[in-house]
Amino acid sequence: MKSIIVDLGSSAIKVGYNNEDSPKFELPSYIGETYEQIIDGKIVKDENKTYISLTCNQFLDNLKLYYPIKNGSFKNKEDIQLIFDYIYKQLEQTPEEISSHQILISEPIFNSLQNKKNIAEYLFEKKNVPSIFFGAQPVLSLLGTGHTSGTVLESGDNITQCCIVKEGCSLPNTFVRNNYGGADVTEYFKTLLQRRGYFYDNSSTYQTVKKIKEQFARTKCYKGAEGEENDTYKLPDETMIRIGKEKIDCTDILFDSNIIGKKYSGIDKMICDSINNMDIELRIKLFSEIFLCGGNTAIKGLPESLHKEIKKRINKYSKVRLYTPKKPQNCCWIGGKAITSLDDFKNMWITKKDWEEKGDKIFKEKAI
Image (cartoon, rainbow, N blue to C red; front, side, top):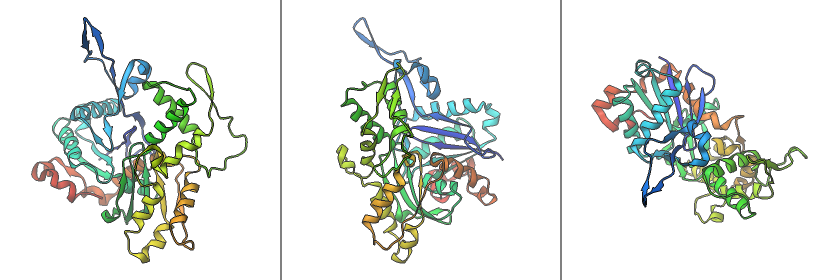
């Protein structure tokens, strides 16, 4: 049976079938609402004007955007319906086709049990899907690199997580998770640019700054080719702006969140904490098998800076080796494709019958 793979990210949702090489499409995971209006002294909101994902793009300046998935979970049950209905619409599936396709959904470690229950309830009871599986993002990402064991740092828009995976199974005692990621880098980058007089706050500003960050952001250790770019960016209104040291300063928060007044562990410490929860004789090997996955790890120079910071924390004679796939943002989806294509995986699906008989207990029985 052909399966649908949904990498459910806070910033973007990647969707496709497990017989394809890459996601069929990537959807911005935001919802847009028209601004409230004051009519006859009363605040009036047009409830019929709600836009989902790509349909928002041509109206960005006139919409109030919000991201329904925060730190890996839907904030409102109603948004589950909006997002999954939109996914199926983009796939152009009829109700009959929906009921014949299994669906794998990625999720972060330590994710809310209630979130799983809400999604399963909607898909089983309203969409009549035959089977569901919730896959841990770090495990799927590692599988997406072609490996089954190692240390995984998965960093997306809202969540950065680390764990050890052994033969395709995560080890819970090594779980380390912080609710920060690429969105924090974007927000800090925007703040730094605003200090120079650029931008004002609205929905389109954030999206523009995000694009600038993706093009220019790098760490102090990045050694790019001389003259590879002129560090100027053309805004939608044709204004040219020059990007200065903000492109480097914005990434410092990944190693020191105190810069923005937060107290999260830096990504170097997260990796060390995860590995140090393993037996001492295993740590040397684990420090030499670190895989960087998720869109936030695509920042230029990140592997070099991370290597340098990890070396400061461990025995100087220990070898630190980092692996970064060509498209780290797609690792999770590719891992989902890989695992659902295995014959051994067929007994891992959670069926509607499992759900009816065991409820949410089934999530612990069938997990990776």
